[in-house]
Length: 134
Image 1 (cartoon, rainbow, N blue to C red):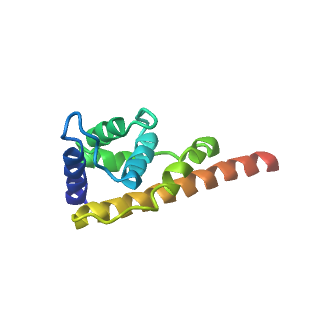
Image 2 (spheres, one colour):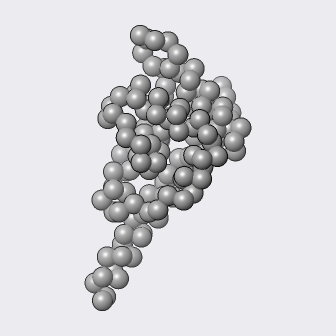
């Protein structure tokens, strides 16, 4: 829901407020956000937690546009979809926070990213098999 996305955005903002201090954000959440940035076509510096936080916070600025962008995202090529696999694998160690809305949002976005990955792989396989049949 929009409320859960707003809570997630607030959580991200709180995680990055201390300038000069290490960013306090779970790796599983950071990796999920990195995968969503990839799908959204927004580049982030590899391995830069601060870059992921900044970019994800910007993406969540307008939750309606963010959700619409995810819903309208065309399937990736099999090669590009394979780039999502490391993001998905590293989201399994998520620890619940003291904010149930953030936890719910994480689960929903993780499920969406996993489904999008499988749809992209299936679409690529269908194209390849169609070409082989032609």
